[in-house]
Image 1 (spheres, helix red, strand yellow):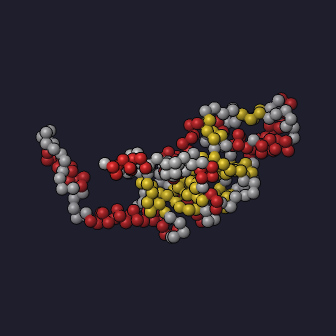
Image 2 (image 1 turned 135 degrees about the vertical axis):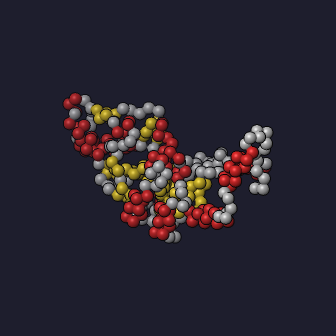
Image 3 (image 1 turned 30 degrees about the horizontal axis):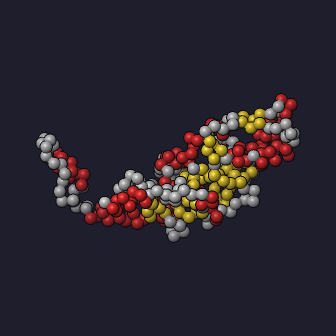
Amino acid sequence: MEGNNTMKLSHHGKKLTGRDRYRKLYHYTSFDTFLKIFYGKRLKFGEAVNMNDIMEANKRLMANLNHCPLLFALHDTLAKYKQISFTMDYDSLLKGCMSNSMWYHYGDKRNGVCLEFDFNRFDLPTNAIYGPVSYKYLLKAGIILPNEVQTINNVEKYVRDNLKKIFFEKTIEWKCENEFRIMCPNESFLNIDGAISAIYFTDCESEHVKVAERIIGDDFPIRYIDYMTECDEIPPIDNGTLSMRTKIENIRKKHENDKTLMQQAFEFYEANKHDKNKSLVMTGF
């Protein structure tokens, strides 16, 4: 009993602060895209003006009537900024690779890959802007240019001075993404050579895993996220894909000449289901 109590209490991770929040970063994607990332050693920056968040995608650009030409300058300036999104660790125990919703929405419905990066190994452009996304219940519906903004240079400076409010705020329902962004104007790719510290799968027996093991070798760990834990209050655990698959194969070999446990259970149930008072607990296990 004492051991069980220790397990239940030990799962509570410590809150991460400062740079510890993004010391490790995670990026969910399909297996095919992972191959492009792995061989190309780069991540593609995406448009920052066509997001899946309605509030971000539909930001209104506003100014006084006589300043309307500046709205086109504002639109062009915003369009120059590109971004890459990551997930941070949720706390000291719950890693950013352990989100069920992120696996479904961005990890090819859990058939894809989650890449783990060491932030300090990124080759960031000198003009990169980065940081965690802040989550709020309400956001301003648009960007209002002040009257003193009258030239393209003014517009560009205004955007640079307000980047955090323009690009690093989302509504509270996105909080589960625990997002970290890297943004750059006029950049297409981020060099990630040497920055991958691990990759994660949700199936240690898939053909994708076996392909990854062949091409990656010992470059970095290939891990398996296991959500089947004995206690539902502890976070998912990660194991090496090869070691976990070996364990599973050994178990199968050990029992390959025996009836499966479920088959035995079904036969035991069928034989005894007519007696509602009879114990259905099998012995010998």
